[in-house]
Amino acid sequence: MHQESSKPALKAVPQPKRRILFVEQFYYPDGWGGAELPLDLTIHLACAGFEVEVICGSDQYAPVDGEPPLDPRLHGIRIRRIPALLRGNIHRAKLVRQLWFYAALLPLLLFRRPADVVVAQTNPPLAVILAAAAARMWGRPLVIIAMDVYPEVLIAHGALRRDSAVVAVLARAFRWAYRSARRVVSLGPVMSGRLAFKGVDADRIVEIPNWATGMPGLILGMGNTLCREWQLDDKFVVLYSGNLGLAHEFETLLRGVERAHRSMPSLRLIFIGRGSRLAEVKRRVGELGIESIVRFSDPLTSERLPESFGMAQIAVVTLQPGFEGLVVPSKLQGYMARGIPVLYIGPDSDIDRFIKRSSGGISVPCDDVQGVASTLIALAADRRRLAMLGLHGRQFYDAEFAKAHGLARYESTIHSVLNPNSAPV
Image (cartoon, rainbow, N blue to C red):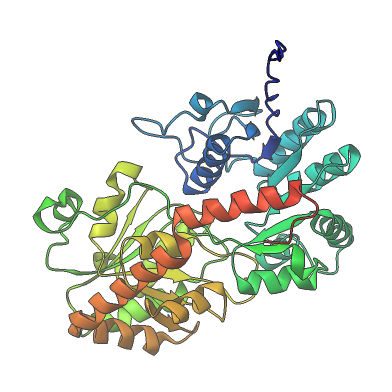
């Protein structure tokens, strides 16, 4: 008589999680939009089944007022913080702070159990070179997220001379890091061209635009207390929200607003943000005699973004010539996600191409003061066109920029570098 075997069935052995090491200076609980992006990404990857560790700084670019965002450690993410060297304003002694970050980061990269893949953002810039060295030493793949292209952006800023010995050394080091990466994430097609010019193979460049951060939605009309506080009811509000840095152009915007205001008494220009050019912009406002129609505000909490964006009839992105493809201001996504029409002032760039593809705004070249004035006057008189620009921008955002799309592309990118036989994403 046949008897069944008494041997127990073999149980499937669970596969260990693949480990991702993420390097970025600013991270949870930072309230800066640039820190929210890596927070979104690492939480997504942890939820997708990866074991995630983040090495970051202790300084906060924009300390959170009120409730912090969801703690990523609740998703099993391990955070290793580099202690702050100095207290106070993070823009004070910035170079010293960065040098300290690099010095403390190096042993954390080298003397550890190797991760399966290393992901590094270009913030601070030399971190990608250190991460590339660690990845090469371990024989592990590297993914670089190029929020800026170095050292070219430093040259454009005027921080370094193109013909200096320092630039020669940095150019070689960054070129090696970019070319050694299994994938380099670009924020747009013009940036992809810059990376290709540096020698990065086209099949290693993946375009993943940033997505909008902060509290979504708009608060309009009587419910917008900020609009009432700033006496902006019945005004045509032009909003600039975000960093006022060296990469951004302001002369054309200010002179265009000054000219448009001559025939538009209701015109108001609102700046919400900080940056290295804030004092210069304030001084120029005074020189143009438009202090009565321009307001400056420090960055607002995430909870108040629906109010600040809800004030605007149109929002502004600007870029200085020479920065195209080196930086891609993510304020564009913040505007489009909320259906706000966009006025772009700058050269042919990723921003310009996104706006033209989306029909979500108007592009005006730098120095075209009359073009800015005419655009504002025409849109104020044609609210139907203004509404259509906002609608087209929102539709483009949902199709191209939405967070779900970006996170899926990042996850696919990680899988592609962990599987050498997979096709490039």
